[in-house]
Image (cartoon, rainbow, N blue to C red; front, side, top):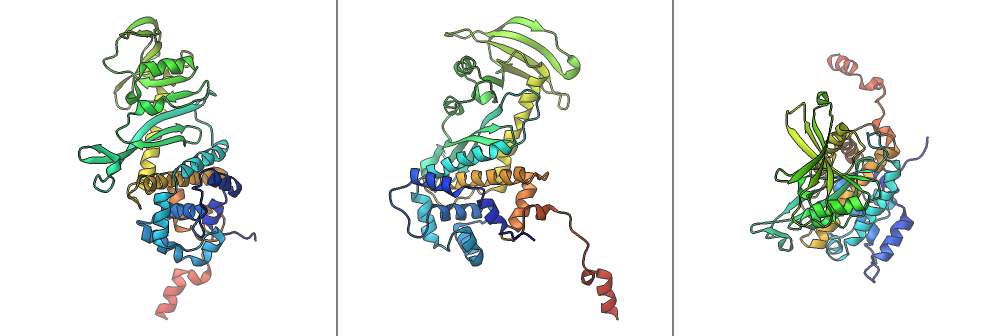
Length: 384
């Protein structure tokens, strides 16, 4: 029988230590920690996410209770104050870079998106993580609110977050969208919040396709009308020219009207892709819902609502650690070819994090119960 270390150890082995050390050197503070290094900090932050610990004290004490297992993880017990100082002072840019590294390693194993076309498909959206204004004054959002905004570009190959930027909640989504560098020929899907005709023109010039919703007050003129299959819910397929106030170049787009058969709601889409079928464009926008599922998963299953530090650096470190934990879960699922949902995978790993077995064993069907566990035999002995 092959020897297996703990499940947590197997997950951490997916992070190459030589690449970790390289990132550590690039994002170092100039002074090497004597006892509680970057690796120990990462292990503690991931343990907090995967073990669902509710506080910094809870995380530290829970790992101390697993003293024998910590040796195999390459860490030692740490004082709560030391852990807190590390989160507050060590640059969160290290965890941002590690998140990017883990995406690059996980992406080749991810299953392709469900469409027939070979273009890369991305969804772009942002969600606000609310914070308490009195505890996080640096993240003031409105007069009585505070928060940070999680700008996310999702890769539909495996539904992985390909890019994440954490900014103050007051920053508009379009500002971050303009900084993205997407591969040529890719398709990016966004909602009405990203409406920016100048940006649409830049994407078109870069030969990047987009699919979005049309604003109700958009002004345009119809240049061409194409036949549609109304049985598919399509209402119209047109080529339009946006009538802007002072356009540098006239923006010619494709306008598709669609009615959802399930809800009866009408949608109007804009795109610069003229070759795909109109129904495919509608299905592409519908697939954008996957990024909403991603936001719901991390908010419900990972620790990004209650924080173990009040500084901006501590908050960013914890959020990026949560995203790294998400990628590790996806990595394990792809690597072991598991058909379970990500939520069920996390719940099972959470209960068996320090169990010494392979990940596949956790999902094997249970064998027959031994004779001494037979309920009827126990009842017979009790009444004898």
